[in-house]
Image (tube, rainbow, N blue to C red; front, side, top):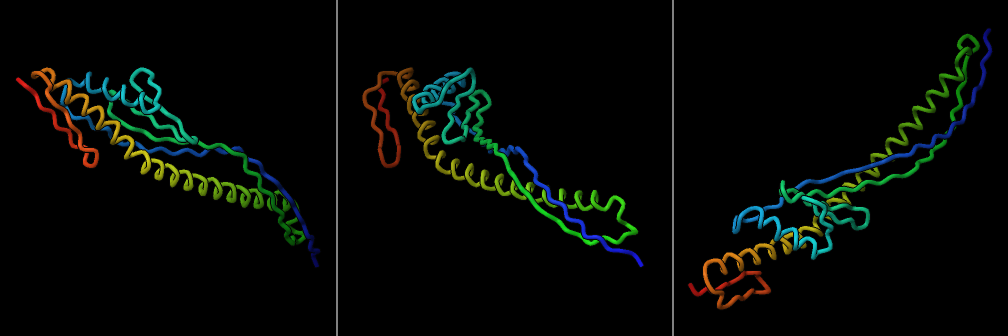
Length: 186
């Protein structure tokens, strides 16, 4: 008759994790002026809105979310990265027959570690999903501001184009619709 042994193992795991996500969208500029001039007007408006210009990129970071506009490529990217330390601990007890006692503690410990790794991966996934929702919300809140910025660049371009055609006599903008009327004397 074989004897049964009770083996109990306890483990704790600490992992440093990094979760990140990003969203890329296009920024469309009308061809009112040459492309270089339209990009320059957009860059000026982005700087007025608090972006920092570095070469062909305008960036701004708010609440850990980086918004970057690649002026040449006409792309907007919204990105966030979060780092944290996750600690999990657990205990596993098993009854082992004497015939399979050799290496049993290592097998039980490996099973416990696998379970703890699953917990860490589940937490990493939960945090990445929360970060994705936060990014999506940030993009929803950012869209009206970016629309206003590009609209201001378009209005400035219209005024420049009108000045190239003749003397600007009058310019009005409807605050509700954003419609712009420019009267030019040729």
